[in-house]
Image 1 (spheres, rainbow, N blue to C red):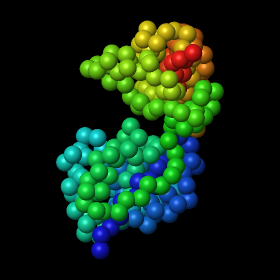
Image 2 (image 1 turned 60 degrees about the vertical axis):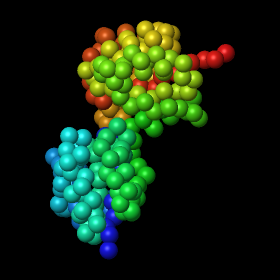
Image 3 (image 1 turned 45 degrees about the horizontal axis):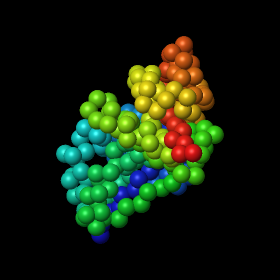
Length: 226
């Protein structure tokens, strides 16, 4: 009898932001696949869960997925978690899901935490239609992607690290105009959660005077066709 793969969202900040069902599955599965076993270990210790951990991340997934498929075919029940949020959203997950589908292995994705939803909803920008871009290319293809996005009319969602935030805000301003509205949130659900709203020029100025810290979600206004 085949096993089953569960995609289990984990908190993006506050450890209480996890569902009862997620905790139940983590406590009952055979193996937990973790993006970083150390980070996942902290979560499991907090909830007194003791289960075997296997490393599964962006640098080993192409070598690891066949072994995961073999274990699932042998009847193991496995939970895939990332450091924070829902697997597959700018995190490992897509490859193993694709291969499980090919192999006819049952997959279930639990609803749960992801950073961009609260950032989008509280941005004040339209959230009835939006496009998720994740991280922009660092070098190759970056300018092409920015030029493509400047004509996007839906609200845009991007992720960014504190080290590249200023560069990204500058590039967005140069491509789309410094008066384009933006909402930048950091440390979603953590102690120092913060959201800065304004034009690209205003928000860039803010972070030039206050060094970026934490992980960022950028919610960018779409092009106005009127």
